[in-house]
Length: 292
Image 1 (spheres, helix red, strand yellow):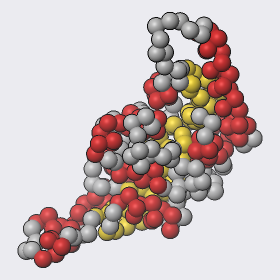
Image 2 (cartoon, one colour):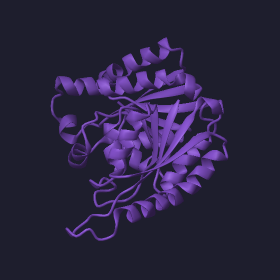
Image 3 (cartoon, rainbow, N blue to C red):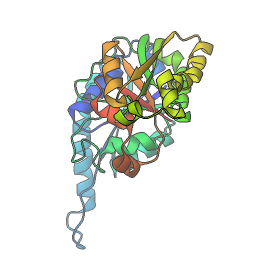
């Protein structure tokens, strides 16, 4: 399995490396590309200024310095690691390297604060997660890491009845041989009834919610996918806000990973309309894998 770990010298990136270094499966099963991307400075003057070759050398040296601690963490595992430093727009370079290297999963830190609760347009994770062709695992600084990834793993998989959440479960199943023994908690959250819904005569959609039919429909097919693959799982029908509920559930049930689907609609969509998946990754106490 080819893993790309994107690092930028931050604590979040280093913690993402610790997640990969905790791999308890066959070390030969993973090939790690450690990628650092240096953003070139904006040139505001038409004059050449500093010779580009000098600037390039300085940026590459800075990238190697930022990647050094992360490389030490991974090599101590020990794992096969190739360290690469590139110059360019970080999100674009990460996505390009992932495609060209046929990467199976991207692992990166997340959690830097921004003017919109961590969802500033410049956030690299915000740009990479919806656009990547492969799963993206986001790790916050201080997140609780699974004890034996690659050997055994408890997973909280949030579903909402969409094709995207079903696809996320299907891709999780496809990774079972790499992730090791899994126990999956399938969770579906439905919002509580508003005062108006509670007082007024119920419409058909409200009756579905009251009766749990919405949760049953959202959980049924993902449960069949897990059953067909022989993966132990439990179904959980819950009420409340999805973002806080998913993170609290995962922590209470000892999950090592939260899995969610994403629609891949781009950074601006998530900035303006919000995304339960990205918001969950921003606050989750355990790593979050976004799959589409």
